[in-house]
Length: 190
Figure 1 (spheres, rainbow, N blue to C red):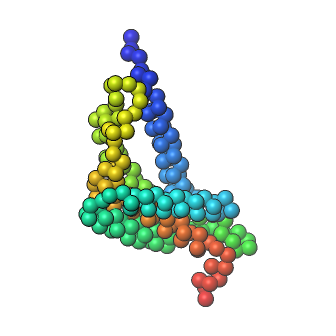
Figure 2: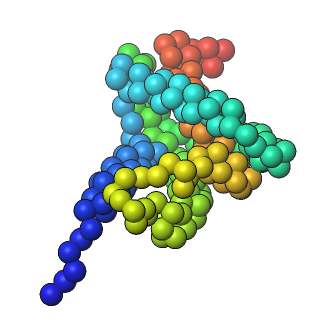
Figure 3: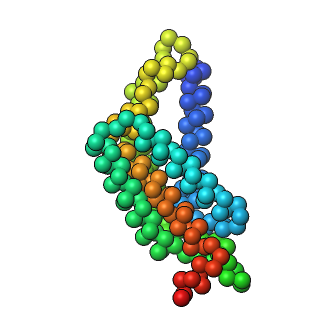
């Protein structure tokens, strides 16, 4: 006979599955061919704006000088990787010369994504496995048990890899949008 599952595990499990699904979609977008129709362009723009807002929110959180330095280094590395990845991105054009799809470099984008996920898991798993979210007094979550600023400012390495990921995504998205705007191919040939 097995022990019954505690009811408070279901929200955590459901949230974890939602996060895994979102990460899978993001990874698939990092390594597969992407459309450049109006919806694809809008998705690139919206993702960049959301990530930029998230980056600004993390900059507001209190950090040490080491974390700020690591964040700046991460931003520079991420932007440099995006620039390098743009040179290895393949664009597909229709008969009129308009870009219809792009295929990102699987190794650069996938590597940035995997580094971010590994460091995120390294940082979050001890919190979950250590029982920091478990509240034996009841089923509700006690916000005093978790300090969100320690997640971004607790480790300069975590913040640096977060900055690499965000800077890469923002710079790469804007680079793709810039390189596929109408008339860019003619400008590049001049």
